[in-house]
Image (cartoon, rainbow, N blue to C red; front, side):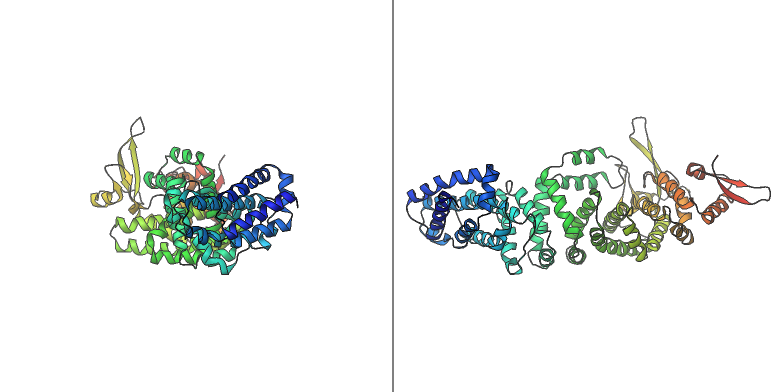
Length: 540
């Protein structure tokens, strides 16, 4: 080790441990420390050389571990306190730089624990210089991020201090702008540890960090992701206006991407499921917000592994299953209730959206089937078919809605004005949650993925009367935009290579007075041979 660096680091240790009263001592050490900090940030070879020297790490570890902050605070000397904190920050900056090249020695010496403890002590000292305190916190975050970027050495005994450290920004709301990104990077690393998440979700401060800070503070005030949720809510889940959402996606910042990565790890972890399911009963508003965030994250990321898929489905499918039962009970009462319907609709829309996005994975197809999900999907589609009204908006040449028509599942006009007004907002021509917009569409998409090139599933859907339901929805319905097209695609999948399904559909079509064109659009035509037998043939 170079004598200059050795001497400087030794002097840092002396200052942090003894809290000298001489301004000159501080200034001398800071003047010699500054070039080392700058060079370790810019010169990789120099940094790597220092970072491979155990003695340097040991001296810095002792410096941080034996800081005597209380002594300098008791001096009640603003100048000395400032210089002491500058020296401390300089030591942390050097640690940050060195940890970019070597994490093993720092972890071996448990320096990460010492840094967390040190900052807890510092923040409890009621410093008047909050700007310096925030700067030290940010430097500590960047060091902790560096030292944990390859592996996380989680120490259960440090959980209380670590949670206090993570809660710090909540008590300093005016100083969060510069904190957010390094905070998210460190938190993302922590989330790599299943042990950390296990104890995190069982700690009393979990809601403060996860909900109050990450969601209410960061996502609401510093991220476009919250705007995405607001747009979804404002436009309605059945809206075809995608421009606003696409603009938000284009504006995704580093903070947005870091939040997505964090929540990817959170929602896929096995410890998240019992936490979320408990919130449904204890904190319904928090539950709904987390469910919507889970929906956005799950459907925004292209690739998931089997472990992640299983973790997400462990809560998604349970919520779907329970909500489907609640929807059945809701319609059995026979009275529309917008308050209850909003909650049920959001739950079913979020879970169906996730299942629709994930149902392209064979692993999820097997998961859904193993938990009798096919039965529940078809049952729910039947409930919606029986209870929802079809809505067709009448638009002028400019595309503005001027009026609308309503009909039941059989195509009969609905004249009950009370029922119509409970399902559609006359003033804004918005479909209300009481008509569960887009729900049937999502179910059809899932069924299509489940039966694609799988004869057994094609047969099961027919035997469970799902085929008739899908055929019945091959109509234009603004309650479920593009459901006709989705149903036609699903019918193609159901008929492909399946003679039983083809014969079944042919018999249904033969009973009708006229062909509605659905089979033609699906690529088939009904043929009656010379013996009077009905067959479904590929369209010529």
